[in-house]
Length: 444
Image (cartoon, rainbow, N blue to C red; front, side, top):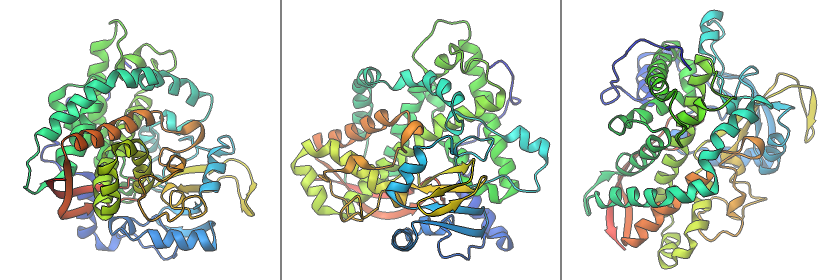
């Protein structure tokens, strides 16, 4: 990856707004451009997630029309896939339901219709999650060695040490933001280790992740321009790391793995940027928002918190249940490649199909009492938070380890985090999580 992607640029993440903040400012300044959602099942609207009122909408959909088409939305026409069984079915047919960026990619958003074709070509970001076989297979195999059981076991001691240090730095009896002090700090540090990223700049990874994963920015062209500029800065930073490691012996960090991989060593600048986005968003948002969601859910269900505190052997299963309950990525999109019938519905070639993991993980036919956190739920592992099939999250084991260690280290310290202040959710239909959550630490 020898191509320079952007000029030297200042990294102003400490003072720059997050993508969510920028989008909310844009909405306030451009009320006439606010997206209009008229269909009762148009669940692409971000307000239902920031206000946490999505549950009854999906429940009604699962009862009345678990596969349904909505039209005329700000994201165009699309099919909702709302049940566990239907999501698994779509995921198991990757040739029929394509993930490829050439067909539209993995999120509900599309480029603006009036965008200049040259600019569109420049901004297409191929990444292996947005590829079909065989390209997907080769690139996924490149990074998979970083997440094998042996490699995960090797990292556990370091993860446990870092987790303990973060927890020991927290104030007892004082209000603080769990998202910033714990969730972001732990996941950003993990990403820095995986990439061999300069430790002092690790918060850049969070800043880039927020801008990369915000689908709503496709609705505001000027913010889309800002987003691309920020991603160019990201790519330039990583291209310097790439150049520094070229010609050196292989090492276990992800950049070195790409350099020494026939499938990824000759990536175009756009493909390099796309895979960075995938690894950063995948490694950051999923774990970060579940770390916040665990604390929030246990606070909502004190009986389950007491059960977990009394029996720490439940922690591994509780991790799976929290992943189900939180579901840190709300959806994945596929594009149909040929006319077919999907459980009685006629899907046409080119149709956009959106699998709502949030809904599948609350499917009453699979999970009894699905709106309740149940830390000893016997089938918690059937959750879809990591996807299903060939595109299941390559870093799932690492995410599970980080979550398990966090709960174990909190238990070791007799630490209980009580929600005690502002709780602000992400305004987004893709990333599902928390921007801020004020807590107070108490001894259990």
